[in-house]
Amino acid sequence: MDDLTKMVCDYVRREYLEEDDERVITEDTHLITGGIVDSFSMVSLKRFLEKKYHIQIPDAAATPEAFDTVRSIVALVHRFQKVPVNA
Amino acid sequence: MAFINSIRDSYQAELEGIRGAGLFKEERYIHSPQGAEIEVEFRVGSKPRECINVCANNYLGLSSHPEVIAAAHAGLDSRGYGMSSVRFICGTQDIHRELENRLTEFLGTEDTLLFPSCMDANCGFFEACLNEQDVMIADRLVHASIVDGMRLCKAMQDTFKHSDMEHLEEKLAEHMDKRRRIVLTDGVFSMDGDMAKLDQIVELAEKYDAMVFLDDSHATGFIGKTGRGTQEHCGVLGQIDVITTTLGKAMGGASGGCVSGRRELVEMCRQRARPYLFSNSVPPVIVAAALKVIELISRTTERRDKLEWNAKYWRGLLKDAGFDIKEGESPIVPVMLYDAKLAQDFARDLFTEGVYAVGFFFPVVPKGQARIRTQLSAAHEKHHLDFAIEAFKKVGKKYGILGLGKKELMARCAP
Image 1 (tube, each protein chain N blue to C red):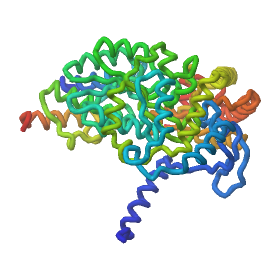
Image 2: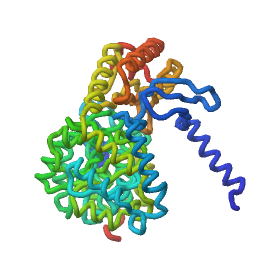
Image 3: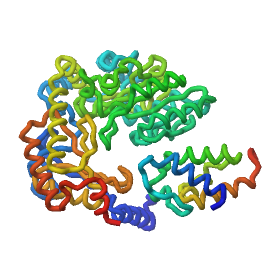
Image 4: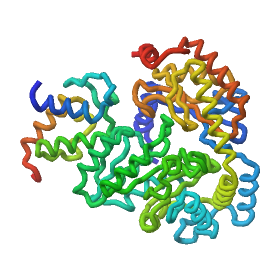
């Protein structure tokens, strides 16, 4: 697991799971369709990624599908790391 | 007309999808006034049958109270049926303002503005009072109408884990760069029946210069020693900046809601809240009845005291019978089943036994958290609850769930 993947997994666990929640977050855990993150709470994850990785994710790209697994989130970060901020 | 076959087919496919997912909602026709005992036609076309109602928001039993009905009749006679106008054109009668003043006194706030519903109040408030320089920080279990209101507003959205004060503090600290911060919470959470830690929220809001927004729809009229709501229960009367609440639950149960709080915030809503500006006035008949409701509940706490007793008694009955319930003090008592299909089957069997309750499952509650939500009323007598528990026990025995804890119940969930 690379650093970025680990960072996102840790954030999801800390931000969305209760302390007594024993579910394991892997790269392929379904976050939105699995009921761990709802679309309402997804915005804090988007903002975390933008702040941490100095990127801007346009609302049109911040879809429930793109945020459904840590793997797809990591792909999203990679995609926008190539785009200069304010481009 | 452009409702061509392909369009019709596409909607039919979507509806089939909802049905296939087990999420299709059906209405049940009630042939009697709202009350502890009602006559229900279910399924449609079947003979209506009498049953005990444990799923209404009729907390104070005022929905069909004779004095409320008489006041509604008098209002209809003296002020007419409809206003045919929004409030600011020619839709404000003296009694609209009188009701707003009575609500202000009752809630201990500075001013109040009526809305057609609390859904409208929640949808209108944020956009009217906040913009992109501000941030809204909501408990993750707030009512859907608050979520919709937040979506209509340009202010930044954030959430904190349900009733987790450490998480809220982290979020408040994170957003100190924003012009205004506002913490959003329900007073009593409608699906779990637990109460917000409002005293701690107020303390944190003071520390971080934040406003507090409270939807007290499931509390106004009966939570707190004199029914002033969660703010009274938590000892923070007069310290909440915005309270939204409804006349559609304990307060007569018809419709109507309000924004009540700091004078400037209420005035901003009067100037800018779109559901207030663009929908008709609350009908005079409802205003007249609501005035009577406030008079009744200000005269005596008898009804909320009885409700408190009923809630305690019902919680005890369920626990003694071996059900897994969500702990709390409110008259919302969820009986946890965890499995969606079991919740639906359980509710259907209860109806056969003469008890009307509804199963709730995803997406209304989180996945794997299905339940029967029971709600108490001051209209319930002890014999209603004694009857209802026998039905619960009979159905519980049928499914072999009595005495099972959370882990054992969850293990029985369909994959």
